[in-house]
Length: 225
Image (cartoon, rainbow, N blue to C red; front, side, top):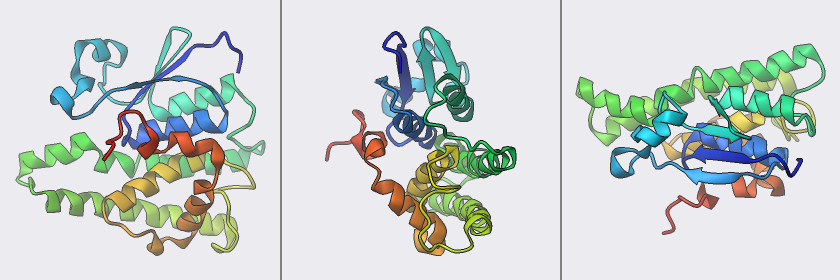
């Protein structure tokens, strides 16, 4: 990356959307300044006037590059792919690109939003305020989504044997979406044993040295105990 580019990422250590973008930045080896926005402290720092001026949705992440403000994780990752094309996170083949994007959307549009913090908090309005009820809600939708992801991956690979990445022989945007969703699944008590292909890919990604600093536990705002 050219040293003239100034990249700042506003995120939260456990936010899966922030994690996706951190992975894309890591795979492309783009240096950036990390600006934590705590979703719980002080009533949620995303609700501050300063942050709302950056992101009117008051969601994470927000990426600022040379003064240009970008929001929505998929839009940010697509931008990074076009602005910094090497290494590529989308295949050359148009059909394969569509498959990568489809798997991303299963996670980003149809699965992750149903288990995010603001949805879980809103369940209290309907009398589902117990943590066990919220966990049951989240695990239901996560499992439904990962069932579909597993089926798509089986179609792509045939079996979980020797699978390294979601598509092809290198990471793609699909892997950037899958690993954070698997992290969320385990957080809500969903064992990855139910999805052997998903599990195999996540194990392989866990050995990738490029992405160690992108992991939730390695963020500056992650709990230290």
